[in-house]
Image (tube, rainbow, N blue to C red; front, side, top):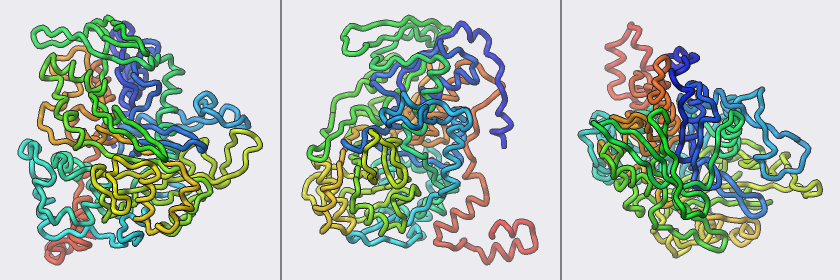
Length: 600
């Protein structure tokens, strides 16, 4: 493959020893950029500083809590084999192991060290080969009745609309929404339920983004109902991906300035050339601004915008309160964008949070009857360390359009389950703890059983509504004695899907930029898909290679799914519920030729 051919050791960029790099934001895009500055840019780690306003890195890739007070994940990311940039990054990052396997289990970071015998990529590959993913109950309705129909449920009109979408250009589609493009009946099909729940894409979101997903992941269409080609990390993505990468970066000398909020950049613009000359920031709780002076030799990477900015949490007895203030990350982008049109238009993505918010909740269930419910739906023992739901189970007739997932357990290194019993203290009793994640796409709707808006519900009320739809209304009192539930409100979580046109998202390297790059979900990367780890890592590779002038290596290609005739035929067959249009005629025309095999 071209990606393997290009996997060479890069030449040392001229003058790299004079450069410093400042990365604004501690999400996966910045961490990846730091890693590529070191590996392919030959930059000393001591010259790299990551500035993060929170007290922890990772951005959207999070996972925290404990078995006593409850675990919390704001969300999760499905992945697949053709995340070429992501797998390239984690092919050289060592996995983690416990420094002292016999020590009591406390905070994971101090007691974890790099494992020179295994990379993060190998760990992810091994666990997914040992336990290939498969969804046994992708859709359900009528209070716990599984929908076993694997078809997309498309009519000829829907197929025509999907085909028309694939043939349109992004310029032709402009700011068209999904609901403006498709007929109303499409939103009652299985395909839409698969689509909207898996990608969190709403009817008022950009049809351009839907088109990109269709073309980028066309090879996955035949398994939309089973999710058989979806990959998951061993633990939550903070512990499986962020921690190993952060520990490797620290070992290289990278500086992490946490609790440091960047408020603005000074950018000198002369004859169209744009150079960052200063970084303004606030440290900790201080209201006194500090300034880092930068030169044209220095590199500044900014993660513009954030999907998880201003996230709030509640608990079993309290709801998560919506924060409508402009987040610091968004304000920074606004300040930068005011200096030049090439820096994008943040208001397109952050001005209407009622179209970008949803509520998720994490259930921590200890020795709970909820395990029996999951086994009934999936046929998998939740304590077996195998994938249980195999991705989300979506409730088609839920007013909140709820979905829930129970991934391989444990999802946290500190989580006791089955024969895996890490101890806080040596005399801790054995127990089985499940971490289950759920969310709803319509937080302003009133529940079907709990007659409240989803956004106003406590953790207990959210789980009550879920159990009702699981057909377990009679078990609610018993289950509630065994759980902690932490709701999370995210105002901007789907803001990257809002309708936009060319120029709303800045280029990774804006026109005329000498030392500034943008990273993450709100940059413009042709043909790739936002709301993925891959998009963030790709932006990092592009930014590093361009700013350092690396020419003997290029970012891995985007997998050309839409250009593979085998993929196109299989996708067409799936849309037509198992048949290929004109198959009899095609077989007759191609009989005796090498092309006839393409239809098999």
